[in-house]
Each structure stands twice: as C-alpha cells, then as structure tokens.
Image (cartoon, one colour):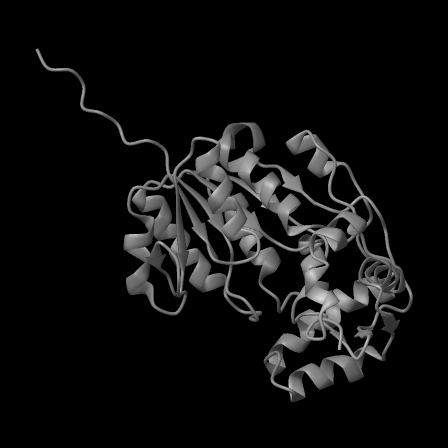
Length: 289
C-alpha cells in the first residue's frame, strides 16, 4: 500500500525581490518557515520583466502566494497586472499582498493604483491584502530625496508626513503572507510613529551626522518640472508626483496609526532610529555634499 504523494510546501513569489521592501520580505519569509522566490529583471532567483510576458510563467511555477509590486515610474499598468493575475490564478496562486500607496483609494483616475486594488477585490478565486504605506524613510538616504550641499529640496508647504521605515512595511507584508486567511481583505496603512516636517527630518540628520542639513521648500510645479527635465521621471509621471506632494502640501499627508503594531506586535521605528542605523548614508562627503 502506498501513501499519498507528498505535497509541495507553500511558496511565495516576491516581485521586486531585489528592491527596498521585496528584498526584506524575501529574506524574512524563509526565516519564518515559508520558502520565497525573488523575481526581478536582474539579480533575483528568477528573471521577471513586466514588459516580457515570457518571463512570467516560470516565475509563477509552484507558488501559491504573491507579493505584488507593480511597474515603477509608470501610471498605466492595470492591463498588464490583470493579465499577470489571470496567469497567477491559473498557476495556483491563492493570495496576493499588494504594495499600494498611502491613500491609494483616492489616487487620480489616470494613475492605475486604485484600478489594481479594485481588480484584486473583484477576484473571487484568491484572497488579498492591500498595503498603503506612508512615504518611506529610505527616500532621504538614497537618490529619491537626497541631501545635496546640505539641503533636502522637496515641496511640502511645511506640513507633515508620518514617514515609515521600509523594514516595517516588509514586516507587515511578511505577516500577511504567512497567514493569508487572517489578513484576507485587510487594508493596512503602515506609518511611522511621528508626523514630521522635512525640516524636522533635516534636524535629525544634522544631530546624527554632525553636518548641517536643512529643508528647502520649493514650488511643487518647479520641483516636478525639474525632475522631468532632468530625466529623473517620465513626463507622464508628473501626475503622480503632483498627487503625492499635493497631499502633504494640503495638510493631508499620512498620520500615525497603529497598523504596524497591530499586525506585527511591535512598535514601528522612529526616524531617529532609522537615522542612527543609516548615518553612513549622510556622514561622508558622498552623503551630505
């Protein structure tokens, strides 16, 4: 008498697996007992390119849950994502955790953030969780909002944002992928514990590095136009930047909540915590110029 054939263990596919949150999700899942496969254009377990559908089937083979990161620096991608999700369902994926954006349900109609959220909600063959994080603290330690000549230049109108550590976003994602049923249909908005102005962020960087840093506010259209002219973002992405900065300038930036603690059981990192851990990003001449 033969026994039942062994069943394959659950496996998660992590899109953007070499990125800010994806790399952390992929590292933490196996530590918690769930195998993970990273997918990205370069440097991942499997190659994955949104514009090359021939890379999609191999990425999905044998996985039953997915960390969904949509194409970056684009506003139109709902059709691509829908086709990929159709393929994912056929391949056996039964849960998706989607990395959206804070206030994604209010995104402009020509930005496909809400369209993807709605697509997931309409699919009866899989469960889903939506993560809508605040602006990420890592923006200040890389090329997104760099310190140049001791200045962080970004339009905020002096208003606040509850900046969140990418590690805390990843920690929430991990919990949803480990126990999809417990988080089915949930919408989480990971934030940091403090609503800060960028001037306060600059003060913290100054205190940690000993190098003076300040915030330079700027007209939003001038900032957006400069980013487009410099080739930092495509021209059509201006609508996304206008929406993101406009939320802060209007006083509708993210505000602290307890979603991270509620899901992970621990408090989110403060910006002071983040700055101390990443002081090297600013302490050298290459960091604070």
